Length: 67
Image (tube, rainbow, N blue to C red; front, side, top):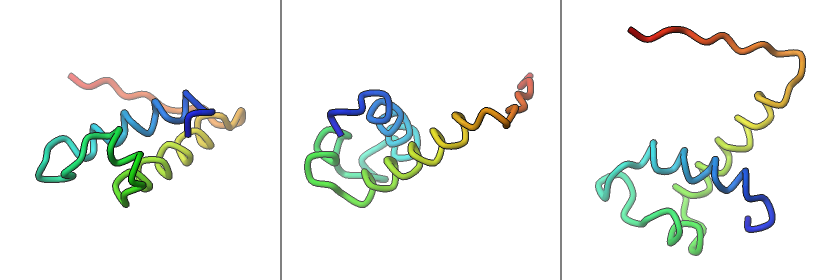
């Protein structure tokens, strides 16, 4: 996914958030990307879905304050 740096960055952020330790995923993001692990593919899918939602011009996202 080297040609789409924004999607890769989003997938890495999702991967690191969802799989924060060795207990969740035994590989760091770069290795998971290289081997195409299920964890990596799930993070890419989530990034693609998030991009689709965020790029929809007709959707106004609601932000809530966390106190």
